[in-house]
Length: 223
Image (cartoon, rainbow, N blue to C red; front, side):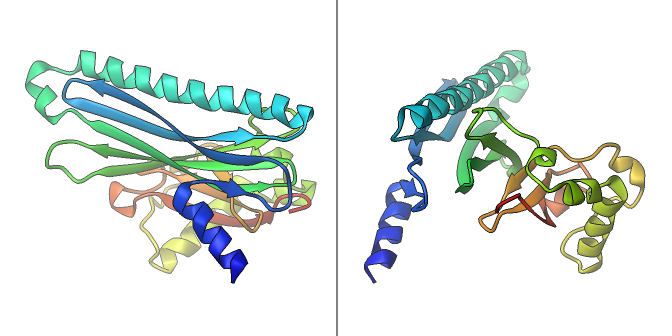
């Protein structure tokens, strides 16, 4: 019971401990107002106990803070380029996050962006970031899978997974293969260590499909 209460407390206050490592995180945010437009970017701040961990998480935190600053600059640029007659419907942007994996020297984060514009339905987009907690650098999925799994995730295999989801009526996709010109780079690692590809609206399907979250059934090494 005490363990359940601890987990509940962590969720309520936005603080998470991996329980299998010394690196933890809590929440920070950046707010930018652009007259009628508004931007909020929430992101995790990682913390470590040892000198090595502190050095690594400092680099990761700087990357995430710069990401927030870049998004804020984009919002300001968009506002300045918006026609006066359209500014009443200027998009507000809200970015929230979820740390989906923090284990085996990897930290994976999904950022969810909500665009609101006047009376129109909000649009949702997601972006995955996975950091190597040894090098403090973002890492592609090819580097964290076994060679067998990395080789398996070719274009035809990914398309077959997408089509299976469409056949189950989980979503609608474009059926021509030109919509998947390259292998996906937008991904995250789920809590069970599996790599998920993220396909935002218009990437492989219409806006009505929303964000397509594709489980590749491939698990990170030592996951």
